[in-house]
Image 1 (cartoon, rainbow, N blue to C red):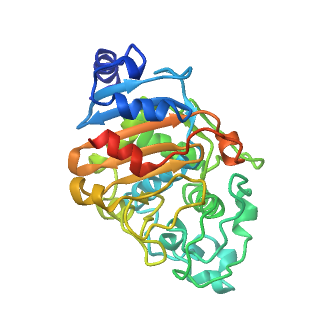
Image 2: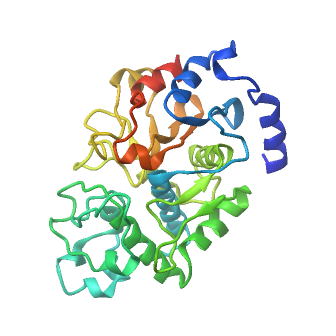
Image 3: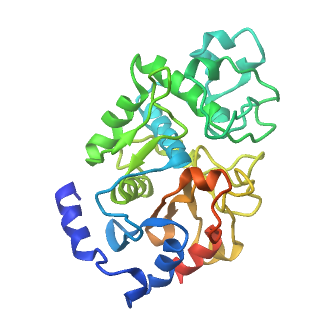
Length: 327
């Protein structure tokens, strides 16, 4: 579906009144989201928008920062780079980062890096280091031994892609994925070194974020290496609930933090099949439910207030929200 057809279909299904005033079965899920700073809720099934709601000053053309929801683009970049024969998931990062060849970091693979099991500390959440500072960080554990959530591994991946493409990682993403889909970030922040932030900083409308999710559910439309894309949704022993840059809502999941709202319900997977998601601070969510052909984009305001523990409103729960959506 091209962008013009997509927008026409979206306009036909857009919710014009507040969610609580609708008779749509999604009303309860929309109300749950709106009560928790929600600004966008979009449900797409098999490529067709079946529900939209934009409370609290949201709007279909307004982009919102995805926070750590940005991280999941890295897995898709890797799958494109595998298809382009730029890298292999199991190659040592030291093949590109020559400064790693003389110490224990030489055993870290790109798979370790993107599954957050490299042995390098994640760094301070919300404060990504520059690419150079991230590459200079030491390993404090053996590869595959420990899950460490944080921004540093994604900045390291950004430097690897910068060297492999001899260019800007974001330009590679645009050329290979976003431009063919006619998806445009409304903003993508850069660090002090001028490089695009890979763990956070992307800003998209709910419609475009959902279209990206639909592309992933479809298997990448031949633009991604199939095996590398599947690896994005295969867990590690260090964290059964994390693949390569995507969260897997299953038993054993180790969440990114105590206030993340990331939780699981075994009953949902038993009834509806695997549920995966990109997730960011402030309860930004992109859920993928492949067996139902569902993609659900949810965005919220107040990221800084939420991450600093100043949000006194009701807490977010992935399990509770998904029960409402999938009911």
